[in-house]
Length: 131
Length: 131
Picture (tube, each protein chain N blue to C red):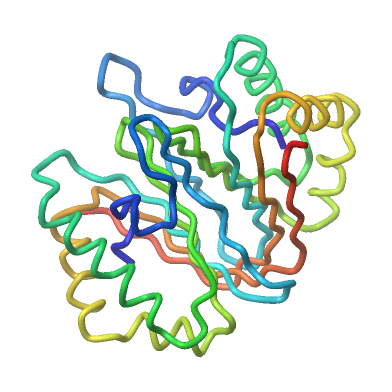
């Protein structure tokens, strides 16, 4: 998964200086499956990374069973991206997409100092919106 | 869970200007349970928030069954904190800790414009460190 920190306009956010608001993923009632991707991005030219990340987000959205995505990155380079999927078959289809395999390879060799990737079944969920 | 974005020294990071590196959580082999807490923090005085977050992190670590935590916050205020636990009983003990209940209340009324809280069983995990 190399789609941490995609251009924010692709994540359904409000535009305008300092008014960016990343959306929460509007997932259905559980159960569904989460891919928790925690990573540390090395310092460098982000152009290729950003282009790839945007492309990966488009690709992920085209996979049957994609439910949503949430992402945040600290100024220090640590990022967490959580993507949500209908089931393990959907994740397998995404993981094995040829373009995504290329991006995963570049992620390991060029972009990430380290990552942790965890697949988990969501059993309970709650939302809060301030009145 | 109000312990998103605690002071970084508490998360086992390297000190020094611009050298902060948030650690990955060194979790045991699955299965274990993840609490995925995605939120948007309102703009305001962060002092009370930071003090509470640091205290919550100390408290969480004192709960039997706590395995680790990962956290990142975008400059725009969106944060994701994932904490890892041995089982659902450990999460219940943490969720119902009296001091944590107070912090949860302040989180809902003062600190978070919105949050999504998901509890998930981690079934598969992999790590990568760049050579």
